[in-house]
Length: 450
Image (cartoon, rainbow, N blue to C red; front, side):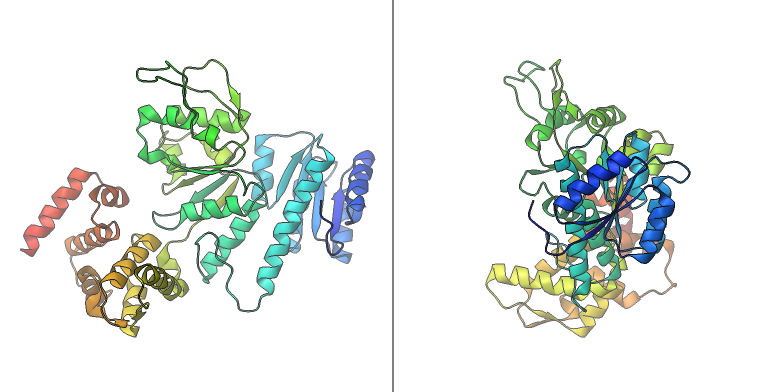
């Protein structure tokens, strides 16, 4: 391990003297400044008198537990990081620890290398956060294409940094077009698995009868047409990260198989009788309310708890007012460079329209719009007449309350269709209706406007 530039301060809390001595010796040998405490009461006294970078605490201790100490640190010492160690590992304990703010969760017995690697991951992420917050007024560095200076995005960047410093499963939530895959890539490439594979899988885009084979692979002769053995996405991602997008679209049957992977770290190829171990970081994403699906028995509660160890909520674009111009300029420069032309600027009126628009397709819709404007623009400045008609219509109407419900619905449908560049399947999905209903509503809207 590379030596640290300054002696970072670590407090170890455990009621077992042998464990305290072992951890203290290992950390001190790696140039950390180490304090020890046999219980929570002694630990809190040290925290009140001494700045501490990291607390390593046992989970189960007499009188006051390590979880109580974690909560105390979160409430009173926000810059102090926490690692949990335990000889009594449970899924519920790990979930609660992560949700309470624990950055790492180690089970006894662990090796010296496992301890030191976990410590370095936590402190490395802490150094990065301190460096970012110390750059006065400067926006956080983009993560794999994620751009933003708004408070909402700064929160996302903090969540990504925390998730990247652990090996816990992550659930990314948010509407379509908010950048959930970019967040997943950021978590992977900011963590210790960055040099290994990142494998994205659109669970909603693979037919149910093929999904198991695509994920876990199959052996020769497993089914009609299986002329040879073939590895699945989980084998390809071994050692790296698999990103399960649209996890809410999987069947309960498939959810049971995914749960086994998360529980045992084993997969079973279709047609094979022997399981195979895989070392994989799982990041999942959904634009659905999984808790509502659980109530309707469409999603397994135990799988939800396994996935939802760390949550990264992606904000909709309408909640990122400070980022509109930043994103628009970024996309304009990107597409102008591809076209070999100077990037056009946006008039003040256009900026006003962009900020007042509700963006059902979020950042993806903004990107598509700016690309179209950059390609079609012949001048140096983009003006309101160059915007799509539905945007001009929306801007002219403003937020007036003199429209009928049918008019509001028709406008929203047009906006969603525009955000998906006319893709009716995707538009129907965003609207929460089937394609037949969408076609009927479009016909009704066209007949009224005729």
